[in-house]
Image (tube, rainbow, N blue to C red):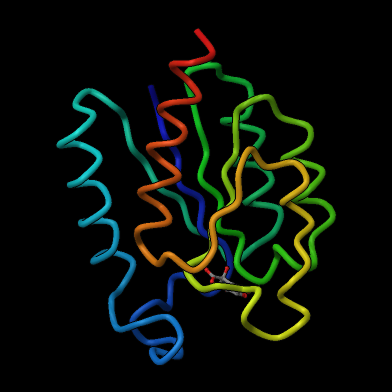
Length: 149
Ligand code: DQA
């Protein structure tokens, strides 16, 4: 099994960016905690992450990993969640399961964050659980991939 985490715009700034909202941990800190947990409970699983500030690069990555039945994708598209019909179409167009994740509870924030072009095509949506949301998404993907066998 291969799990890919895709982070969209500005998530490279975690730790520096509005820490009162997104916390003081960098993505490297979060990834160390997430991958340690997943590797301990699911040895043998391949885990990779990708971050881009560019919509097209995120779409290319979804296409690249999107047709493998042993792969699952966790997608935090950042603000592109709320604006990108193209990313929504890419998620709809691939067969690999995608779980949409947000560090913050987008529904408790500004109204423009309440709509997602991705949610209708995602297997599940997690918001407001911080790094725990990524872990929960990865566990759910493992369950989905083994249940589909
Ligand atoms: C986010 C929420 C989005 O509204 C925001 O634009 C982000 C991060 C989150 O993880 O909470 O960049 O996706």
